Structures are given as C-alpha cells and as structure tokens.
Amino acid sequence: MVLTVVMACAVLTYGGVSLFVVAFAIYPISRELFRSANVPKRLIPASIALGSFTFTMTALPGTPAIQNAIPIPYFETNSFAAPGLGIIAGLIMLGLGTFYLQSRVNKAASKGEGYGHHTEREVTTGEDETPTAQMPLSLALIPLVMVIGLNALFTYGVFPAMDLSFISDAFENVSPSGQTGLWAILIALLSASAWLIITRWKQWQDLKATVNQGCLGSLLPIFNTASEVGYGAVIASLAGFAIIRDTVLSASPGNPLISEAMAMSVLAGITGSSSGGLSIALETLGSEYLAMAQEAGIDPELMHRVATLAAGGMDTLPTRVQ
Image (cartoon, rainbow, N blue to C red; front, side, top):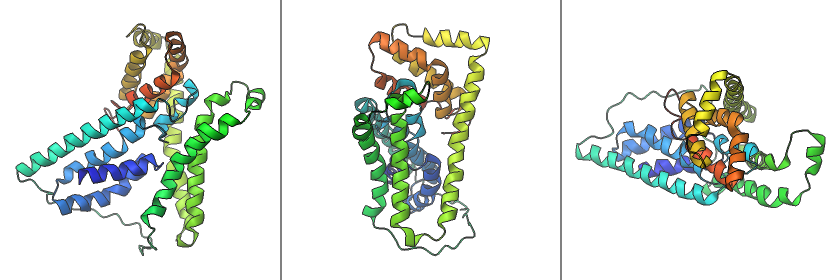
C-alpha cells in the first residue's frame, strides 16, 4: 500500500505536476487506501513525501521540477544532466525510503496498531461535484509521457540542429546553450497542457476556472524563487558572506563536487527550501563552481546533478518542503 502511494506521486511529479498539487490531490486517495489496508494514517505524509519530494524532484533525469531547472543556465546543461548518477541516486532513494516505511508498517502491525480513529475533515468547494466521463488510464498517461518525451526531443534533437547564434548577437549576456534546457522544459509542459485541453474540450465544466487556478498556483514557485534570488544577491553583497564563501570553497580543496554539495545542503537548510538554497548558492557561487569544475576536468553535468541532489536533503529543517 505504501509503495502504491509512493509510485502514484512519483508518476505525477515526474510527469510535470507540481509537488504541492500532487500532495493535496493524492491525500484523499491515500487516506482511503490506508484505511482499507488498516495501515496507520500517520504514515501517509511520509509516503507522499517520498514519492513527491525526493527522487522525482532532484534525481531522475528529465524531471521538470524547478529544482532540476535552476542549475541549467549556470552550468549550461539540461534537465537530463548526468543521467547515470541520477538514476542510481533515484533508485537508492526509492529503495531505502520504501524499506524504511514498510518497516514502520510492519512494526505497527506487530503492535496491533491500525489506521486509527480520526475525525476526517472533508473540503467542500461549493462547485458541482457531478463526475465527468472517466478518462482511460492510457489517455491519462499521455500528457505525462509527453512532458518527458518532448523535453528529450527538443533537448537532443530540435535545438542542437538549430543555429541559435543570433540570440547571442541580439541579447547581451544571453547564451543559447544555457537556455535551451529551460526552453525544452517549458515547451514540453505547454504542449502537454494544450493537448489535454484540446482532447478533453467537451469534458471541461469550467475551463476558465481551471486555467486561472493553474496560473495562480504557478505564482508561488515564481515569486518564491525570484525573491530568494534577490535575497541571495543582498547576502552576497555583505562583508560577512565573503567568510562563508571562502569557508565553503575551501571545505574540500581540489574537489568542487564535495564543496558544492556542502554549500547546497547548508543553504537549503538555512532557507528551508531546496529551490531557495539552489538559487542563492548558484547565484553567488555558480560561476566559481563552474570554473573550478573546468579546472579539475569535471563535467558540468555532474555538477548540475550533485547540486540538485544536495539541495533536496536538509531543505525540510526550518519550515517547509519545496
């Protein structure tokens, strides 16, 4: 039962659905599953977090999560950076996380602990709750597959075959190699959304409300990341930051991967946000890490993947998961 919830969250987040949306959408389903299997309700948050906030957020290559997109312009990589390392790290997260949760389930069962008695709070929106025609599973998976497929197509097929040098000529300090990875993610997400709207046109009860809700939901990661980049710029201008920067950069002389991992983890823990820690660290230290990697002969794709993985570790400490 735990693995079912974990994989359901993983499929949705890897297909481009926001982490926050998945958490709220899967909770009612997981609640019924856990109740029917008599599994403690207290394990639901951990199951959702494992499927949504771990390997599909930072590890799996091609994931459209913002944490995987932030390093792209700094290292001139793409969302599929270091796929081997990402897959290995993702399998470790999934395997160990599932093993731990299942051990908690077994321990609770040995003590006779079941789902428990809880006062459920149902959320009513006031809208028409009449269900629409159900979509076959194969059709429901198409937009999720489109996100990864189109992302890969534009990353490795379309953009490499195009001459984008005119962008550098027209816009100063804009490198196409540092932007195409982001463009591929955006095009994939927009295409999947358009396909879903067009193919299910007759089933929409209120398309305008749905689009508005999606736009409003996008404001959280946009403004959160933008504000934290600005916050990082302010921090970088302080005299005390030079001490922190020198300490982090010298933490592992000759090995920028370890230094980078420490910097991302510490800043993610301080800000309570993986995207915030990444933004601040790369905005202030990104160019230095890239230079260190080139000097040490380390592939920037490896720097990209290590940065995202490290940012997903201590980000839950002070306040929230992101």
